[in-house]
Image 1 (cartoon, rainbow, N blue to C red):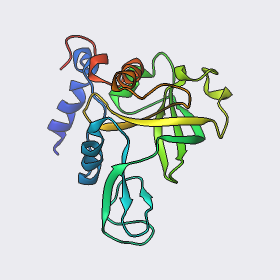
Image 2: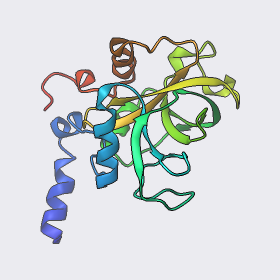
Image 3: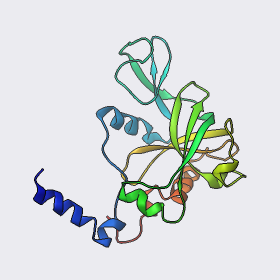
Length: 189
């Protein structure tokens, strides 16, 4: 890319109207797009190896355990516990920069009951503690997938007692976090 186009791309982000309409990163591999497509139904779907049964996360072309190429997408367990959590204080993506002005963005590593370890956005409002410092390793959570405003599936972790059985409940949580297109200010794309 030439310097002229690089400068134009950078100058676009200096205009406040374009910064307000920034979206989450859309770059995904073809396997990443398959994860998004599989999770449009509203339930958590992950790859499972037909030979050894291992749950694959992140999604891949061959099994990480037995190297078999027969991976199927199927519904999986949503319960697990927190391995670690962290707060994002700075991001290079304009979409997250706007959200980090008020408070840091909580992220958790979750070990699901099916054996997979996933990275997810953490919805602190669903926990009694309401702060990341008070959440301990081993706190029980539920994880669900939802589409963000760039229409890619993301994982969100909530407390184990939170009701996420209905799609409207999961959508309300995603909107409260500012992840969905409905959370974008009017005048956005």
